Image 1: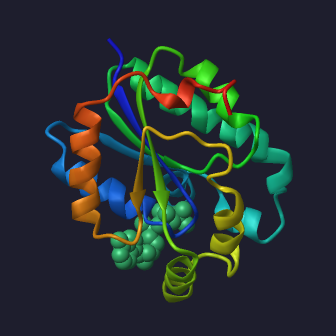
Image 2 (image 1 turned 30 degrees about the horizontal axis):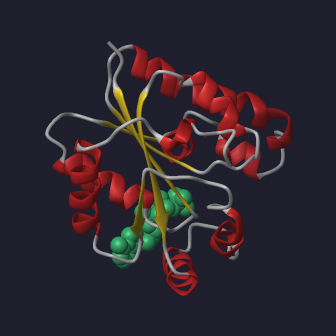
Amino acid sequence: MGGRLIFLHGASSSGKSTLARALQAALPEPFWHFSIDHLRDGGIVPMARFRSGEFSWGAQRQAFFDGFHGMVGAGLAAGNDMILEHILEAPDWRGELAERWAGVDLFYVGLRTPLEELERREAARGDRPAGMAAEDFGRVHEGQRYDLEVDGGAAPQENARVVIEAWERRGRSRFFEVGAV
Ligand SMILES: Nc1ncnc2c1ncn2[C@@H]1O[C@H](COP(=O)(O)OP(=O)(O)OP(=O)(O)O)[C@@H](O)[C@H]1O
């Protein structure tokens, strides 16, 4: 039997990682927290050499994301429950992932955080390029249909409680309603 997937989707600095950690702390079973941040910051990808321009990110990007999406499927297929935080950057990813994860017990959560708060957080953390959050804000939720939307400006523990409560009552995920968007 496959694991269950809680997918957190929202702009950079919307609070996905923070909510994922709050969920991980509150869920009744051990869920993985899975993010490209972990590949980048955990030393799996040679980031310094991409950042210096020695390696071309453009040339690697497709394989990187194909691999990342495949790792989620592999984790689930092995029976692991997972919280995925991710941004669907390309318009065709949604359909591709709906196909790849067909049959997965998935709960799709949209994290909406006001632009002013996104910009405040981005400036305060200082580890994301300025303007990234605003760029995401304008397009990240476009055409998405979520099983639940939460206010990324609210306290993470409260959002975790709301997500878990809704997740426990979940039906078939709207993530798979690809043709309808
Ligand atoms: N509910 C919240 N209230 C106040 N600050 C928050 C909240 N959630 C997150 N933050 C802060 O905002 C910043 C970004 O949060 P976080 O890393 O969780 O966002 P993210 O969506 O995972 O970002 P990215 O996609 O860029 O990795 C962090 O400094 C975090 O402490």
